Amino acid sequence: MPDLADAVDLALTDPVTSALRGRLRAFGATRGGAARFDADVSPFGALPAAPGPGDWADLAALCGPGAEVVLVRPGAGPPAVPPGWELVRDFPGVQMDGAAVRGAPDPDAVELGPGDRAEMARLTGRTRPGPWLARTAEMGRYLGVRHEGRLVAMAGERMRLGGEGPAGATEISAVCTDPAFRGRGLARRLVDAVAAGIVARGERPVLHASAVNHGAIRLYRAMGFTLSRDMRFDLLRTPH
Image (tube, rainbow, N blue to C red; front, side, top):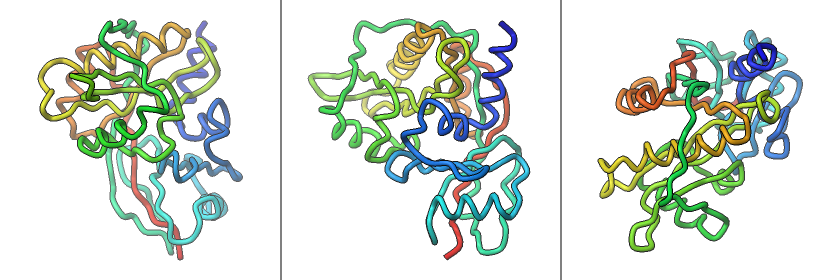
């Protein structure tokens, strides 16, 4: 169904807006051409491909004065911000497409729920896989591996793009392993298990990685993910 594939590809060029105008609309807000997740869910925001002054003003209104937002967009270079805005940190990334990934359930993976949130926060605090805030875990399904009762690795779902089934894609995120348990293949197993759940819904697994995290990119390539586009995750501060 090429029309559905084209719709998913279009959503992937602007994942934040697609998520917040679709299946994750309860987790943020849009205003004009701008979009922003709630501040306790994700720092991500978005603008049109060629934003004008009104678009920047809409994003500033969604965020509030002097607030930080991570602008997510395709591209190879940092954004040209208007006067009053500050580029705090430029962050190049890549988007990886899992259309060919089937995944595989893992018998050792356990589903994580509200009672696991404190442990999930501690693990992400130790490993820094990416933004993890008070309500991030509400965005999708998370799986973990425990050792002697302690959570030592996890991965889960973050942005859900487009529609459901073949019209949609789900981003795999928060892939992390306690330093004492690295080198055992836990990250790969958990990504496979999360991907299997996404594929079972008829959706496409996708993920994002830092452009300089060559080890992660090699792992994801070996699993069947392909590089689809350069992405930016630039940290900005709104005008005061």
